[in-house]
Image 1 (spheres, helix red, strand yellow):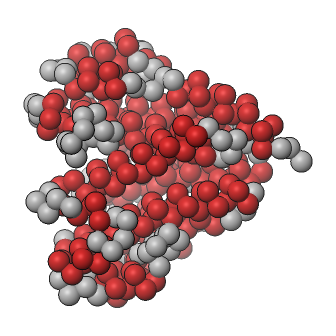
Image 2 (image 1 turned 45 degrees about the horizontal axis):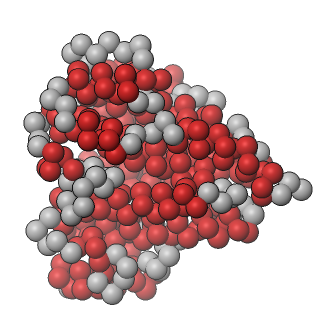
Length: 354
């Protein structure tokens, strides 16, 4: 039996080398200062570790969507560099983490069909068709409608989760499908964590529990306010495995009499920061949630312990950073100033902005 030091020494060394390629605060400042997408991409190519992703890209007239695809495929490439270091139940864990890309692709297929468009139009936007994918993209791309797409998922873990919703009204169908895909991902992740070594299991259950808490609070708040879902639906669709969002708290939040009552219940938890600025709750809730998780993963990474958290933290930090890069590109497109841009990015650049 390998010791934790032996098991994680090589992969942690590799990951620290990869982490050094990530953006510095100075890089963030420089990217935010750019006035055009071309200058923005040129900086990424010439001055950062993303030259690996963008080195061969012609920046003249490049569109934000193209940048996003290149960066996300780079992120997948980093995942693949890490997964080879793991075996057994630990490799299975990373295979499940890969499913977030597969689910993102499925959502893209479904949204495209929901808009009445041909899937051929988005084939270049598909993120992952690699060896860890369990769906037949060649088959899926031929689907002409949502019903056909779901039938083409028969034999995968997705079919049984999605098929029951085909009779739902069109305006709610996508909502139910996307919620079930997200629930499936977290369910599979939680189930796999149970197979890890005790210390890794407890640590991952802790950070996943916090993430689920935050997602549940966001979901219950938005599901009630914007989707007009019944209280029973709110309870039923909440994620299991939260650190504090157990059934009783979920039910209490779901049956809150008003938005103010909901916020007062959240105020008794560690997550009141999501609602502190009542004027910007709806606008910045997701960013605040992600910033909180970013800081938790950064803490775990910096601790540098010989356990699974260096690898798990790195892939989440990279994912958040790529979201920030895309957000900065979007802010350039809409000509936002530095202070306004910082409100839409996850990493804290200046104190007091969020």
